[in-house]
Length: 102
Image (cartoon, rainbow, N blue to C red; front, side, top):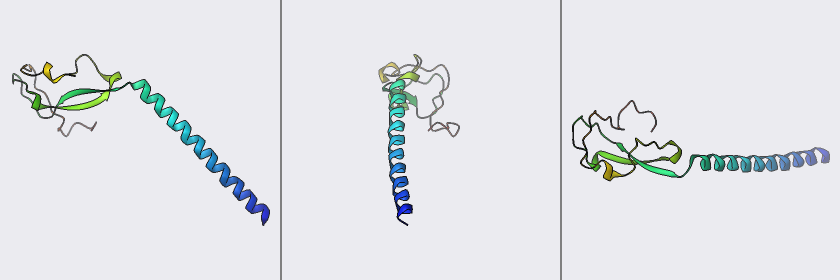
């Protein structure tokens, strides 16, 4: 019976040790992934449908943070860029049922 207890204790200690190593490796991999994506950048997206030729106002938009790796030049990063501008195409808001990313 002593041999079985000793074997059980060895396996328990070994399993805790391996779980700790796996957790550490997982955290390292996540940190590397986050570093590759870059710092979060605030972009402004329409929160409601906006008709074409309607004057844009900052209250029509909401701020969302995305990794800087995915920011393009066509994205609005400053609300002053859109204040008083006019959209030539209709804009669909994020409250739409077709948006599955939220």
